Amino acid sequence: MVIRDTIFADAVAAIDTGDLVKLDGLISQYPDLVCDRLQTGEPGYFADPFLLWFIAENPIRSGRLPANIVEVAMAITDHLDALAPPSRQSQLDYTVALVATGKIPR
Image (tube, rainbow, N blue to C red):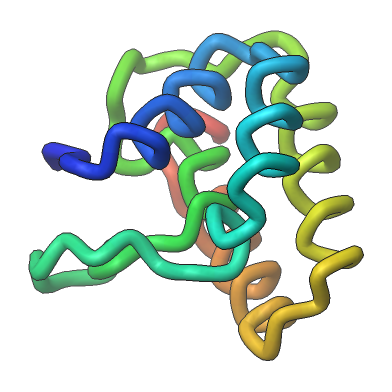
């Protein structure tokens, strides 16, 4: 998957490296990162993903999760809780499914 939105790509890179400071800064500056879907136009189970979905390392980008992935997930969900978009619960539910079925998290 090619992420053309550079801000969203930076946030995904921060997830992949476990950079909480960078991730928090990006979400604080651009709160829509946790509210809006990335428009990819691609079909399938990962169509137009939310940022939170990327904590499952799905689609596989590096083949590993950062050691602090739980803290990364909590940082995103803290922002999600504070902003309370209508998609909040569905984001959480689908993320759990991605983590439970993903090759890397298992």
